[in-house]
Structure formats: C-alpha cells, structure tokens
Amino acid sequence: MRPLLHQLWRCGLLLFLFGLGKWPLEGHLMRMRWRHQYGGAVYRALLFEPGAGADRGAVEAWCARYRFRPRRIEPQPDGGWRAVLVDLGEMGQGPPRRLRLDRGVVGEVVGGGITADVRQQVGQGLVLALLSGFRAVVADFVWIQAHGDWMAGAFYRMPPKFDLITYLQPKAAVYWDMASWHMAWNFSVAALRRNDLPREIQRLREARRWIAAGEAFARRGVQLNPDRWELYFAWGRVLYYKAEDFCAAAEAFLQADRLAGAPAFVGRMAGHALYRCGDYRRAYEQWKSLWFAERGARPHQLYSVIEKEIRRLESILNVPSAERVFPGERLTSA
Image (cartoon, rainbow, N blue to C red; front, side):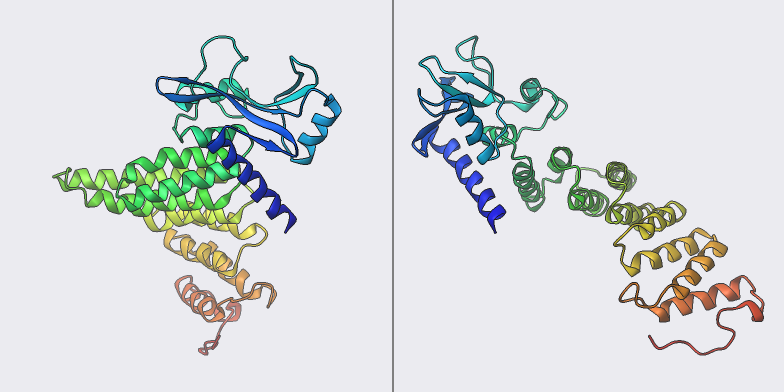
C-alpha cells in the first residue's frame, strides 16, 4: 500500500507542476522557471528551493525522501542551497529551448538516458514527466494514445509509439507482445482492406510487410529479454500463424518451454510446430517428453491430445510395436 501511495503522491506532484508552475511543499517552494515565447510557455527548469536557511544536507535529505534524483545541488544567490531536478539549460543564458523530442533536446539534456534517436513527440507535459524519472507513467500514457489511434483507424501512427514505449520500458513484456500482435494481425488485416490500393497484389504485399514487422518486433523483444517465455512464445506465435515458418516457430516455442514459468500449452505448441515443419522424429520426441514429464508439474496438461499425437507419429514413423508408447488402441480420457 505504501508504494502505491508514494506513486500517487509523485503523480499528484507532477500534476501540480503542469498546472501551476509553482507550489508550496512542507513550507518550502517548488517551482518551474519559465518564460513565454511564441505565445506558449517554454519551461526551463524544475527547482526545489527550501529557503535561504537550508543547508546542503537538508536539500539532499528531501530529495532522498521523495526519491528524486536531482541534476545537481547548488547554492542559491540569496544564500542557502537548492536542488535542480530538471535543467533545460543554464538559467538566464541564451534563449529558452523547447521540449521537443524531434530536435534532440531530450538526449542533450539527459546525457544518454534518452537519446535523440527517440523522435516521437509526446507533448510537453509528458516530456517533463520523462525527464523527472516517470518513464513508466509516460509509457502508459503513450500506450493509451496508441490505442486511441487504433480505435480511430489511424494504425499507421502506432508503430512510432510502440518504438517509444518499448524504449522507455524495454523490460515490460506486455508491450512487446501486444505491439507485435497488433502489427502481425490487426495491421495486416487492415492492409488487406485498404481502398487506396486497387490491386490485390499490392494489398497482399502490404499485409506481408506488416507481418514481417510484427515478427521483427517480437524478435527484438526476445533479444532484450532472453529470460521471458512470453516473448519467445509471442515470437513463435507470429512465425507459426502468420509467417507460416513452422521450423523457426518450433525453435521459438522450444526455447519458451525451457524457461521458468512457461505453461503447459507452450510445449504442445512446440510439438505441433515440429510436426508441421516435417521434422516428425523431433516432434515424436517432444510429445513423448511431455507424456513422461512429472504429472502435476504443469497444471492443465491435455494428456488426451498428447496421446493422440504420439499415436499418429508412431504410425507415420512406423515405430515397432515393442517400442511404442501406446501399443494398444485405448485413448486416455483426460
């Protein structure tokens, strides 16, 4: 409960930042330095100024309490110390710079935390949140924007947002999974219905392009999260159902099945993919390994499906009766 309340407090603090520009906090002053330019507010810095009597230790203690990581702690002109939480250039030197991701300001300010390669514009408020350490909050907001684009039929706006979201939260498997699914399924189907492409071959080519993009996105998620079975499964799912590369899908499913937490259906998908790949011997070994695995180790295992596949492969491979797992005709009921 306390971590949740802490996050709510920080979000409330951020909303004050966007709305008021300055506010009191525990008898001190938190404020934004800003100027008006071209009819809009251009923010320069977020400062915590506790007053002339505060020493450096008090400012450091405040930052530690509220888990802010200041850019620097510096003396105030009228005495005391202050914390610079966000700095968009030295105060009073040169023209104020707008918070525009497409101009590389974020990469210049943060110094490697966010680079100028992130070209998507998310609005000034969200950029301030990003610079203040609210990467997860920004990712959630951008995801909501991407979903709004989908509901409006503007799916072509979503891939840049997916790139930004996974850049901000590369360890969140759900973003990689859902983004690859959107591309390989929803976008490819939408491409087949495009009225601006009169020829069917053009629509098919566009659909295949989105399938390839979804597969590449899932593969990139696997490379950054090699310990997550969900992403290996998402990668294999695109390869199996959309790209129809069953051999590659089988390898992805097998890798997912080796990782901790993988549910029972992942191993069965590996068996199905090996069968459709034409590698009957490996498919047979995979189904046998599922049958002889410790019962109860993975709940919801479908042993009737496993037995059916084993029997089919024993027939295809002409396995001698003495070596078969099921020499008889009876099928299990579970």
